[in-house]
Length: 305
Image (cartoon, rainbow, N blue to C red):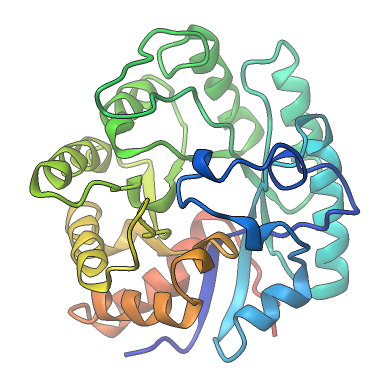
């Protein structure tokens, strides 16, 4: 059953004339992007484009996640998003970028937290290129004491951490956040289960179970696109149902990852696939995944119409 109201807990907006987006404007390298050729993304994707992409869907609020604008312009991105909200009514929450390894990380957090829509931070740790590689203990990794100290600053500012790591780092992620008191974490993209073999899924599932054991962790049911492979609805439904079993419907939320997700499937197909995954749940549980959980975690006031 399709939803009657949706909170999109993860999307991006950008206006290329507004600032610098190195990954879109400089050094284009399709081989370095997890979904391959992203040439179609190298144009403005603003509020009008988001509305056009989601036309016909009952979007009532959204969460904007930093779009990898030039890092020196992170605060400018937050300022711009508030201007977009004032004009368009969304996004309704902002996950900003702060360099948690920087000596002035606390000041950066304070500057972002002063803006009323900021709810969290996304700063990606250093990760290995594949399950066969390791960066454990290296600078910027999840074991770097500076990284853990940076995460420890978030609760005092009332900010959560949006965590994005591939599935082979999920156990390390659980280890890292266990020792950070009061930290709320939202795991992006269902832990990026890119290897859908039985062995690959077992590896992903083990890491997800470690995270699910931590009550401060929620998960976004989002971005099921696979490197070098087409959209696989049946496999994606399986992954979502396993995530729901591990975390419970109370800690899962829908997210589109627009416009990136459009490289593999139109948003209508993404929504249809999520609806299939949620079909065994009762109506209140489905509604919580579609909108209630994200509204609670990101403290939203829906205004999109």
